Structures are given as structure tokens and as C-alpha cells.
Length: 352
Image 1 (cartoon, one colour):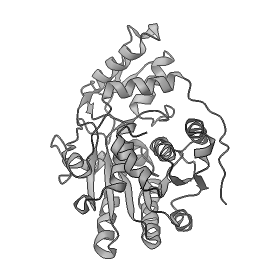
Image 2 (spheres, rainbow, N blue to C red):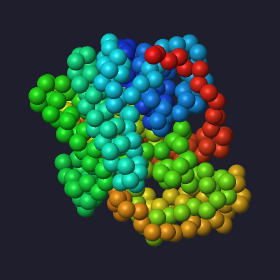
Image 3 (spheres, rainbow, N blue to C red):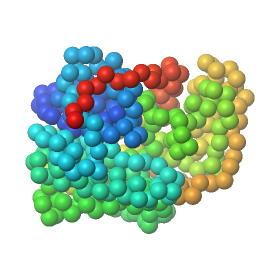
Image 4 (cartoon, helix red, strand yellow):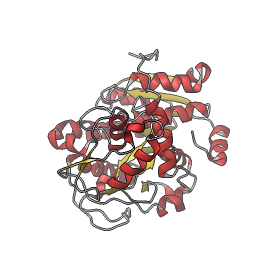
């Protein structure tokens, strides 16, 4: 839920219909919850390839049955142009989050990543153009920077891709630029940097570092650091990302449109520092962690050693202000993981 009162008031005063793709996923379900709490009508689209039905159960519980009734859910796939056209009918805003998002998995299966992240993006972009959508906001990635060595990373300066995932996200930006030039169909891209928070899946070989570490630490299992621990990331709590999406969708300044923005905290944290902070936050509840130490293994192919965003452009043109610092966000995420992350079946209504 966005904490900025002016942003909330602006959205509630001008209600509309929003499409959230990947609505059962980590970021998508957080956007869904925020929009329903703001009394918006929402179309949710997900094929449950990576999204989870239990995320929808949790959103319904959080917003209450009355607000949940404002959701129209479509179990569909962005790789289908027909599904995208159905989802975009009568929609004012699109928040496109559906994608495959693992660097190492993209190296193993580049075809799947192209199908979801490029073909799927193009399908939705076409459907949104033809439906007359007012604002198309899409999830980009810091992986677009590739091997560019400059820090902090600034939007105009990118290098060569280091993975199929990074390449697909760059192609999306090129398609977005092309649609503005050829069709006058505008969009805003948000390059996310290492987002974390409630509903982020801790399972699987390709799980993001924070949920994976929290789950392993709670269970007394070893935590592995790829490299010497000096690898650093710009970790961003999901509520900051929700704020950025809502600002991008509703910004009035035409200079802010047809741009890409870094969405992050603007600070670097090494993996060694991250482990220490998580241990400090978890140890009062799990005493076995007081003396825990990580295990080191080889650096992972496709990853960059250092990542930090310059968020000045988003602050200036979108009014973005990250309101959750790293430690505060970690404390909130830990509460969710420690609570056990319910795994019930969703009663969500599907549309054939």
C-alpha cells in the first residue's frame, strides 16, 4: 500500500480500470493489493507458471471480500495475443509485471525467456495500443546494464547483455521506444533493482537471495554466498516498487512519458553485509543463528559484481521517493516469512 497521502488521494479521486499482468506473482500481487485497497477496479492476468494461487488468497484476506469483488481475474498467458486482447478491454492503465526473471535459468533456457519476455511483451503492447490504453507501465530490469562498469548506474549508459534475461529486458525497452515513434503509443519502463518483500518465493534453485537466505536461516540450513561476499546489490523493498508503478501510471508531466527509470534504494549493500543484517534481525527469534556463518562458493555466471542505481531521474520526473530503507523492509519481509506464508487454494473466479 502506498504511504504517500497525496498519491493515494489522486488515485482515489480519479478511479479507473487497471490491468496487472503477473497478478499472482510477487510484485504483481503487491500491486493488486494496493490497487484494491485504493478502491480501483482491477483486471488480473496470470498463467500460474511462476505466480501462486495462495498469493491471491492472501490479497483477498488483506483487502476484504467487498474490495476483492472489484477484481476480475483471467487465467491466461501473455504469449497468447487473444488473451492479451481480452485482458486489455476497457482498461485505462496497464502495469505489466508478467515475465520470467532468473538470470541463470535464462542461460539454460533462452527460448522460454524469449517467448515470455519478448513475444509476450509484444503481444501485450499490441493489445494495449489497439485498446486505446492511456498509460502502459512495464517492469524492466537492472540486468539491462550488462557489463557497463559505471557506478552508480544511470539510465542512458548501458553495456552488453550478460544473459538472455538481460537481453530480453533490453529488447522490451526498444519495442517500447518503437511503439512511441511508429504508433504514438506511449509507455514508461521501470528498471527494478533486486526487489524483495512479502510473497517472494524462497523455494527453488533460482530463488532470489533474500527469501532464500531467510528460509534457510530459519530452518537452520547453510547459507551460500556466491563469491567472496563483496558482491554488492541495490536492494529495494517492494512497497517502493508499488509506489513507483502508481506514480508512473498517473504522472501528468508529458516529459516523464516514454522514458525508462531506475527504481531502487540508491544504496549498495554487499552480500556479507546482508547476511549480517539478516542474522541480527532473526537471532532474537531464532537463537541458533547468533553464531551462524555463510558458506562461500564460486561466483555465478551472468551476474555482475556490483550494482547501484542512480535514482535521480525517477525522483525528478516521477516524484519517486523510496520510503522504505533496507533494514525496515527486511524486518517486514521477515515477519511474513516467519508467519509461515499460508498455502491455501485460491477461491478466485476464473474466466475461460
